[in-house]
Image (cartoon, rainbow, N blue to C red; front, side):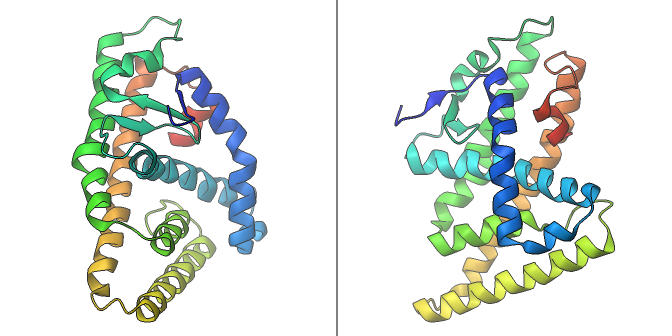
Length: 224
């Protein structure tokens, strides 16, 4: 549909791994300070960005390419899942597990993102290109990274300040008089993504117990 193909859990692992070089390329080009980080700092920032972008893109790009269809969640750049057919996403799993519980958990998480949490916010906000670009930047530098170093926290704060200053300049230039409400939308979207990340991390541990993941998959280690 629309040039996209249905996602599968095995295919997603390949897609996420294949996307790592482009994520690194974007992050180090847009934010050169990352190149000065040690490996632990780099991995902390990059994997958080991959997870937060997964959640944001899952709804944002679904609304863009499947307008009016809240049943779609994008699981990678080219793949999607239909929430009411989510059992097809795990059809290639061979390990024993509680299929119905896994399907119910996945359906609940994705439907909440599209229909209750992030989806309605994005529809109301109707982001322009500058705002969506700002959100990607802010997702790369969240204020909630646990156990981050002082250096990471300082750079995160610096970029938060810079991005919001650029947003204010954009609103002034475009004659947007209600820019406080625009900032409120963006802040709400960021908080919504943060909450979804926490829920997803908790779900991943249950999926591990259900043998949906072995614990060795790239996707699992990025999210956990």
